[in-house]
Amino acid sequence: MSPANVCESETEIALQPTSAKSAAALAREREYQRHSAEAARNNVTATSSRVMERYASLRYANVIQKDFLYRALGVGGDLDGKTVLDFGCGTGETTTQLALFGGVVMGMDISPELIAVAQRRAELDGVAGRIQLLAVDLLRNPPPPNSFDRVLCSAVLHHVDYRVVLPVLRNCLRPGGKIALGEPTAMSPALARLRDWLPVEKNVSPDERQFNAADVAAIASAFDCSEVRYFNLFSRVIRFLPMGLNLEQAPALIRCTVVFLMTLDSWLAKSSLLHRFFGAVAIVGTKLA
Image 1 (cartoon, helix red, strand yellow):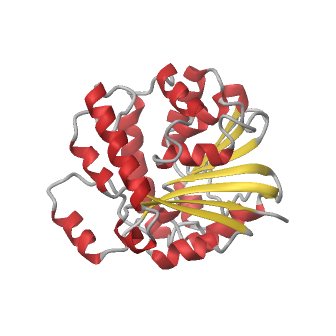
Image 2 (tube, helix red, strand yellow):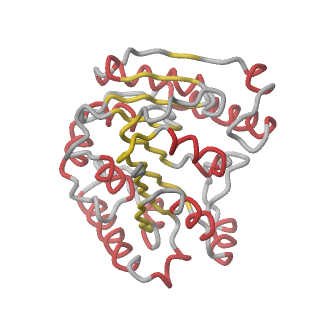
Image 3 (cartoon, helix red, strand yellow):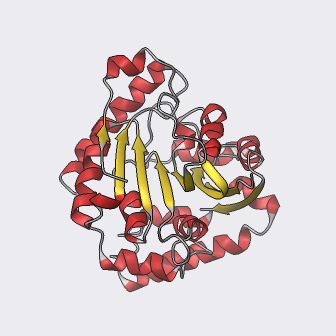
């Protein structure tokens, strides 16, 4: 797979069906992503050895959403040589990491500015030859049927109409292929009101919508086999801890606190009665035929 960077003009996208809820919503999303790319452009660095060691060990795969998704994709196992679609790849963190673990990866995003950042990251990580980066709309440029062994969607589907996007993603999976999705949830109205009330900066795009229980059930049922795991209950507080969101660089005490809270969440998630209070879900689906 040779690297490429395909971009479409905003006018072209606005005149065509899109994976967003409307052309206006897509325009707002692209503007939001443009600002995100500007913030990230000057801070792109090569993936650290500590990050790679963490995911290679999979020691947090039962308690942290991203690590769980990576294990489902085959990191630390059978990912080597597999074709992977990183849908909504953003600045390319997961794209380059999956390539470093041996995947042949296509990163796709609606934002050409984010794709440019991802290209720079791929160069710094030395995996540009294993990655193809496309700034396109999935519905206008769907991948060929049965073209990928794995698909990753990390906090992407809640930005689009998943009812039209998910069939396209399923179609591009080969038989036996897996899709790993990680999305935010908001199933408790009381917690949603509390979240809106708290004086905490919320980095959200204008039209995104956190998933409810019906959304989770619909996504899981779109595949022949599926596994659903919930994350982020008490571990919501880690955003208030110094370096709490950067596990590799956090001091030992902070790191232990984060892992403890996430481990506690993993035990509480075994009770379906508590799922409505969690803030994130991971769904792993398998296409059998």
